[in-house]
Length: 347
Image 1 (cartoon, rainbow, N blue to C red):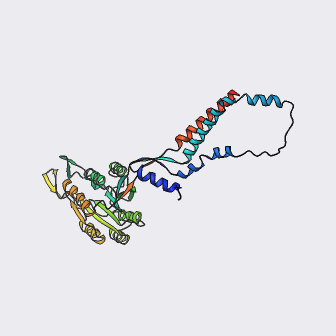
Image 2: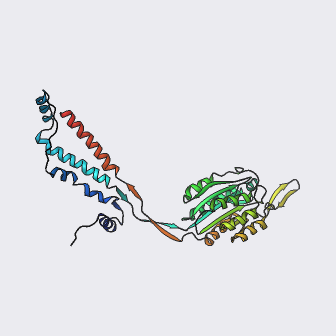
Image 3: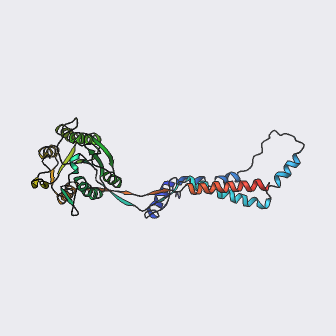
């Protein structure tokens, strides 16, 4: 019967029964076979070979000098010390690492690009947040932040558009950084006009070669296309050919009161919003159009998008690993250096 167990099988057994809940693991466990190599070499019978010699007049002095360096009493200690250093080197070569407890990472297989209008009209203060009239952009930021936090497992990206469209954050799983980049966006950063077509075209360009099962663009604006080289319709057809679903959101109140010389007058601050165009874009790509006239409606819209585009599909198991080989390696180097100093100064 063969009682030998391969290093691969032994490693798998250790993983199964010892490391399931976190612990040490060796990547190259097979390196352990070289550990007894110095002992085997020492046990081999010495073979004498005739060698050329140089006759010197002071051989006796050299011989006495070398023999007084390491006494026979300390010879065993030095061998044990060398064996300890060798063991540390072998241990380091086995690549020890600490394996953490398994953690599940939800993966949706979906990429979601968020396109946010930064044109001059987003400075309108026709929306209420915490009982205060604030700009549309501030409301969008406050609503988008929890939406981003909820999209665990999706790859998210951020496009800001005004006169031109700019990729503020490439598609990433780092929701914290994306939220920070959104928070730092300021009115007028991308210009005063609105390049909706360019924003859609940029999203299509960034998502064209993705192999994700679903690609989604959530586009928010409060106006109409007034800038850019690409029309929204042409960009929408490009997005549809790329497999991108576009959800469009028109934001802004339907009515607001302003003070004039003749008293208060009611106006429509969203008169420039091109709802027909946003509806066509959504219909062309299989998405939906939403109208947000208040902060509450905008929150409900993003909650509805959560339902339309559910986050979690599958789960992947991730086990954090930390390399530890440098600890035995550095210890071996330090001890070898110390032992060398001891030998030199004793001699």
